[in-house]
Amino acid sequence: MKNETLYGEQDGLEMNEEGVGLWTAEKYRQLQLYAHFFTTGMKGKWGSLAYLDLYAGSGQSRIPGTNEILLGSPLIALSLDIQFDQYVFCEKNLEKLSALKERVVKRFPQANVRFIQGDCDDPSFQIGDSIPKRALTLCFVDPYSIDIHFATICSLAKDRRIDFLCLLASRMDAGRNLQNYTNEECKKVDLLLGSETWRADWEKYKSGLAREPNFGDFICIEFGRRMENLGYLPTELYEMRPIRNEKGVIYHLAIFSRHKQAKHYWKQASTYSQPQRNLSFD
Image (tube, rainbow, N blue to C red; front, top):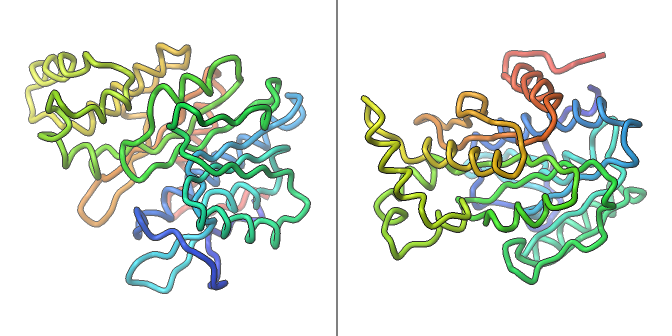
């Protein structure tokens, strides 16, 4: 894998800063490696390969308190040795989307890219025919908190061959807001799981554990079950990649696919994304 860098440089354009930390490189390395295995293994086996980014951001992230600048997920996907045939980048913040466009046009002028401004969870949001129905699609879902609506996932999955690489804010958001999110008046988890009855499942989960239950772990497990109901392969908590800061796990990164080959690629990516491993596959 030749183009393995995750780092960018100052260019005077808008940067992602919210939800960015020293752990962000770990998240992006896992994405980079999984996408590498995905395009390398699937190229030529489908009519086309597509990459969809629902929270594309500006294309570069600045790590607070350091001078480090990371490439964002769109530029990582565009930098792969074997590229996707189509790219669709969605972002609701117009300033960030404008910065992303400028970076993409400058660095990857020949790429087949469509930019969509809007909130992916808005019922009126549509990607239309940006991605051919016959394409095999990898969709990166990377919200700052547990913001993604399950209805959005369902809509995208309908009549498409699409895998979802999802960042679940298990401990960073869910684990820190147990009291707020379990309140009957709060609908955030209802929207994430596409369910109004999940609180009963939370009570069952708590009663079945000898140890102190973790709400963030429960959210990951339940999200996996909802994906299984859509026809995706079962994904257990231990199969999800924990993303850590200096205090411990803050996120879980998980792949959801209908084909077992994705799990093989995921294991490979998880192995080689460890900091001590050499990323050269030549």
